[in-house]
Image (cartoon, one colour):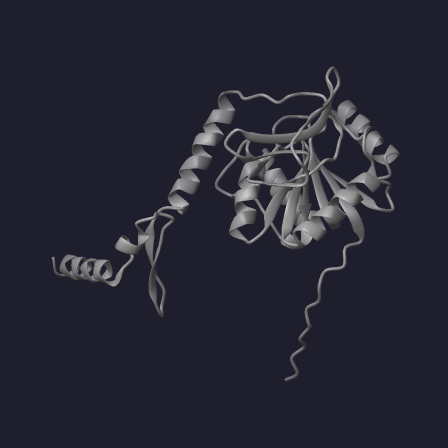
Length: 262
């Protein structure tokens, strides 16, 4: 019997950008769409996808984010708030920022106009209706977390956010952590747009923050890893050499041996 097999190939993206939005207010979303179109993000270059929450919270942000990342066909996936306007920089400015990232760090996978590189090191390049341009930092800057108003992701990075988190906050931070685990980096770039709001740290924000910290505290815990072929110790602790040395492993094996006999 003849078996048909197909050789794999790199994905050829039919669009340059996929522009994805969680929508609760159709009028505001239409205004956002028009600003993209007027700034060069035309239908021949872009596809527009949305998750419809106009009748209620059908999708939370984590679920919608993963659906966008899975279904988008663009080389670059933009996931943004409905209350932004592309009325400052345009598509040529964004292309230039992406070229800068390619030269600086070929392993970049995420960028945004706002982020944080560390404690008290928050950077941004964004306009607000009553304040105009607010800019702080030297760009492009590698960051550990990004703001969710405008997120651009390389489609080829095949990233996703956590399945065991939910809600409408901190999915950008989770995405950056997932990217780092997969060998990619995130950057803040000088791409100026107008964001109509400053966000809201409500009770739900702190619930998600607590769950995110609990998840990654557990994941990054010090522990022994046993495979079929070897055993090794994982830890970021400076005393790893004490916990992970052969003598410690000897006592652990002795302890497990005693437990089995009890």
